[in-house]
Length: 421
Ligand code: AMP
Ligand code: GLY
Image 1 (cartoon, helix red, strand yellow):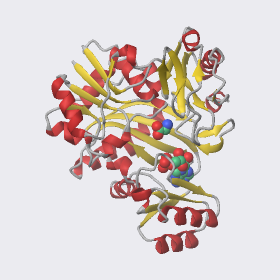
Image 2 (cartoon, helix red, strand yellow):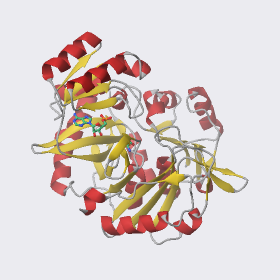
Image 3 (cartoon, rainbow, N blue to C red):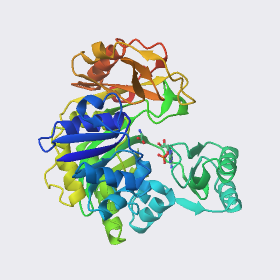
């Protein structure tokens, strides 16, 4: 099969690596890809926002299947454009991508199908939102409705912080994404990510993971796209996974189907595990980055076969096979991330680091210039290791990190602390 993978991050490098091992694959294109995906297939220059260009490329290269990595093209309807042209694609269509594209949409679905989540109200007027938080008090959570690159959520410890967040969102800090807000109760507990493949009718549990959103050690500093992750998450016992499937994932798949917007693709549930069980914080409609890097390293089944089954509506009944080991990834970022990252610094020692046992290094914001590896983004490398447990995976990952010579970069030194403690 000829496969086109869309995206350029560490997630796409991990997907490319897993897809490249499939016996079903004959040719892999990655658009735009990165220096890590180049040896696994053919990186191609394509404007993913130009759906006609993507469709034309698929026709010329006889692409059988398109795998979409990031959320923006999904929410923008790339899968609809491909399907209208009889090109099979992995991921939800525009209507189903609303699960990530609109927080209000997801909250209403939870209400209609009895999916446990924080109590909430939607507001499209500032005065109503302000009145509501003044009545409810703090802590309280204020969210811009639409896609805001992970920055549209304020967990307000005080009413004045909540007021400030509402003012900021309605002043246009997130553009159209902030035309509406969701205000919800603060949830207490342990946060975990859970992934399930869906085929419109059924869901198949894939794996759990935990991310580290804050930039600094000890979960301090501003939020990022994720500074490291591991899989599995110890809190997700088999019983808890079964409960999440039964109480959250399966009702979501059934609800989306009942509404006439069946969900196909990977459902990434952000959960809070509290005293009275799991509650949904939010959905994403694509693999997490860097969660994908750790999950695919554990996957023993053919990823391409699973993604195809999701797109075609015939997911297998049998559970997926995962290595029992823990995979852990440390994100190396360019100085000043998550602010404007310092680009253009040289990175050395990646090959030596990758030669460490059970280590795989995924590229994200890198580029090659005259044979030199150069930092070209915020999150730059994902140093990933497999170990018998989280402590061993952590030790292996940091041993590899320490072989990388990159004065312009940094990483957290405590990835995995929760699983180890
Ligand atoms: P979201 O983009 O909805 O995942 O929110 C970003 C982060 O804000 C989450 O990963 C949580 O850490 C936090 N958060 C969101 N909603 C809540 C909530 N209702 N209670 C507590 N924390 C929340
Ligand atoms: N690492 C969090 C995300 O991909 O949204």
